[in-house]
Amino acid sequence: MKQLTEVKLLSSRKSTRKSRSKVVDKWKEKSWYQVMSAGYIAEKTLGETPASDPELLTGRVIEMAKMGVVDDLFTDINLKIRFRITAVEGNICRTEFAGHEIAKEQIRSQIRRNRSKIESIQNVSTKDRARLRVSSIVITPMRCGTSTQKVVRKTIGDLIKTRAKEQVFTDFAKNMVNGSIAREVQEAVNKIFPVVMVDIRKSKVLTLPS
Image (cartoon, rainbow, N blue to C red):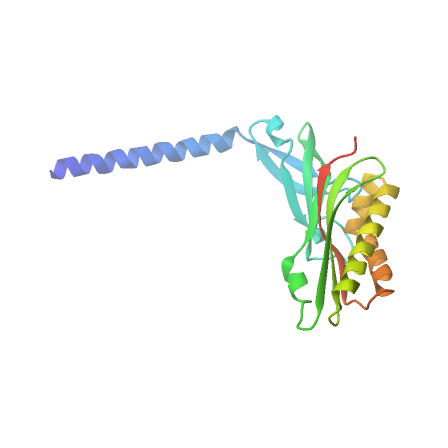
């Protein structure tokens, strides 16, 4: 009985060693590739990613905080940018902008009792026929009525759709990330009702330019 137990222990150790060696071998088979951010956002290396076959990299999404992508004194640490790998050249991965998102904590910190939160979500098309889903948020310093919220929501939607139609994909993506579209929205909404926060909360690229 004692001998049988010892054999089982030894066999389990052997199987563990085998499984460990297999994992190590898989990593040895992988190569590391440098990921470059989309040039219209910033020409910068985002880091490295492993793959056993470069073809497996296409479509992979890399997420980075804006402060890790854009060298800007006033960069927003609460904003994350997503890049999708679209091509591999040697050991360099080329990417396109795939979307962005503001940290939920940042939004929650602005929500107070007796304030109104107005959100708008719409699909837009750029001048070169890229399609994106854009989510915007407005927070007011005091409660506003349903009719006012409706006007604000329409104003946001109309302005963002207009800017998308006027701009090519690369410009529209850059202007969402650098805050220029949010500033335009704030200026337009302020004429209707005071605000404490206006931002393009989230975006997602549905299709790239045709």
